[in-house]
Amino acid sequence: MIDTLIKYFSFPFVRYAVIVGVLIALCASLIGVTLVLKRYSFIGDGLSHVAFGAMAIAMVLHFSNNTFLVLPITVLTAIILLKSGSRARIKGDAAIAMMSVGALAFGYMLLNVFSVSANVSGDVCSTLFGSMSILTLKASEVLLCGILSLIVIAFFILFYNRIFAVTFDESFMDASGQSSKAYNYVIAIITSVIIVLGMNLVGSLLISALIVFPALSAMRLIKSFKGVVITSAIISVVCALLGMLISIIFSTPVGSTIVMMDIAVFAIFHLIGLIKGR
Image (cartoon, rainbow, N blue to C red; front, top):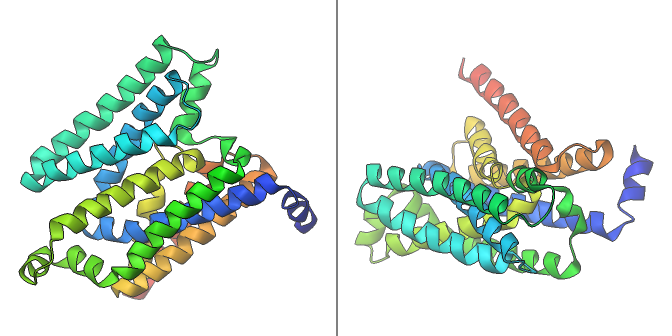
């Protein structure tokens, strides 16, 4: 098996895929801790559905790089959702339900009416659950992903204290002269970037798993915020790496394999937490 892995890693496209997968998993785990603690996990799920609708538009319009259309639409939707949710929780939940379901229906209808290929079902399935296009990445796409990932990581490191404050006590942050609303918008925008980057890896329906599962796994055993962030990042990177390697060797779906790794780790951590609790 080691010889097989060495053989595969001799190909540039495999190395590109692993680099992108690890970067996406790392970014998703960092922002995922804040989203889970703030009860904003539903935003990631809703935005992933919106990204599918935007991807359908880009495919119909024959965009050479779908990111340049999908990313602005997803970011704009994140801002709208957060603004709606800040007024009333019920209104925010209703807005997310309408946008997510509507985007799925719109995207699927668009791909059927203006079919861009003979295999519409295959295109839809690949967009929703991920595809092997992660193994056909170009150097320019890897560079773009690397730049965006570094921006996300740098923001989290430089503004760690403010992220901590906005996660646990927005009122205190506002009283200290910092705008919690501004940081909430930035967090929503970063979430949109991660979702768009991760669509080729695990698909629009499974990308929220990369955000939620590592954070929940870490919270089973770790109590401090910094500890949860570090543990979540390690879990996410390891699961992504193992999932991609298993997918390459055994030809299983990339996205589903990574998510199954995350689920397995969550089950193990949850079981250890129950034992320690007793």
